[in-house]
Length: 207
Image 1: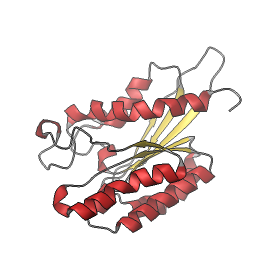
Image 2 (image 1 turned 30 degrees about the vertical axis):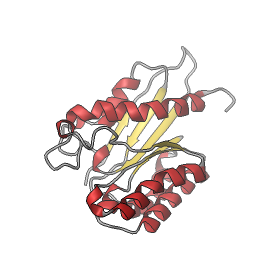
Image 3 (image 1 turned 90 degrees about the vertical axis):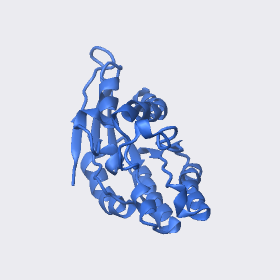
Image 4 (image 1 turned 90 degrees about the horizontal axis):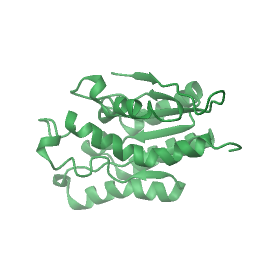
């Protein structure tokens, strides 16, 4: 079980600081599984933002092997403890690989999104997909969960976090499930593309 906390403090303007706390709730994809910690996309995101004009605190509460049920069981405590402005949800992959009901997966993610929004946090949902050997019907039901939730709750979405990565052996570890070090900057840029507008929204005066 792994849990990492990263802090990044930067000034927007001299004498004027806007703080944004970002909570990441994910699984092994967000814990740099099989890699050195500083190779993971979360650390790369921290480094990328280091030269940006933001005052950020990134809390990586991801756990290898985590499911949506596990995240849902922890979300209230994490929201109370960290009081984030933005919540990044990267869960569901382990549920899918275990053949969990799409209805259950969607319900768990839905509850996490709603509880985050109830605490005035914006949510960025990172979508996942599972291998085609699970059958067309199940893989489509699973993939549609994320777009349905994004539409229902009007939240930002990365449709598939491993888009262009999962099918390339040169970007995946030998297990065929976890992205390797070469893939991490690509993942980081996909997340950053959606995260930046959310950060800008947070630091706007009179928000």
